[in-house]
Image (cartoon, rainbow, N blue to C red; front, side, top):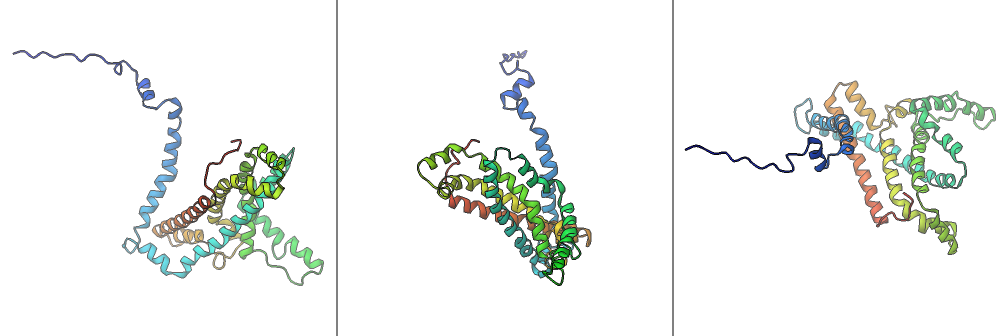
Length: 304
């Protein structure tokens, strides 16, 4: 018996080119442009994080949680969490509270470019250059101490660097421009017609801010706080150059650096980095929960 093969009739999918098939599955040219960004993110962020997490569970003593047990059993190590939070939280809050009125003032200016440029200059200088400038002006032999001693206001130099306040002031200077720009973007996105309507109905400036601006700004301010906090929590150069790395300003990033490059214990350094990530995520999650409790609903009435 001879077998007879029946040819399958050609369908519309068979006549489509590869490009058309990809388009039908949502992989058009615009979507394909995101592939380099996806590969870059996987290579630069996702893989290092996963590798660091895996490495943190491979300590020198061989136990699974040995690095974490060592960290939380040594006060010299786990106290760095409190030290870092004592710097990052108040700095972030002060920067945010200071950025709000400045952003509203810039919003009303006809030509805000000059003021905005001046406020953003610290970003261009960098943390190290800001630290060197503070040592020059606020150090024991700096201009500030020389002037106040010449005026007879004090008999000895005021200690403003190599302590907590030196790092604190440095984080304020370098973190404020970032917080200000984020806040300004939210403030300028609110439709001026809403404020005009409130003024027409007789609402005072404080009432307009409390009932119109604040509810619309809460979601954006929460995100600004989270981003600014993460930036401040990762403080390292300021804590070394302007603080006391072995004392009051021994932040958690210094502990990770010493584990990696002084003790050459990369497994322990990875564990400290994971602890840093957990602490930051905990603060961010708490802020977002508080945001949801304070304001529920869409951010409506803005320009974009």
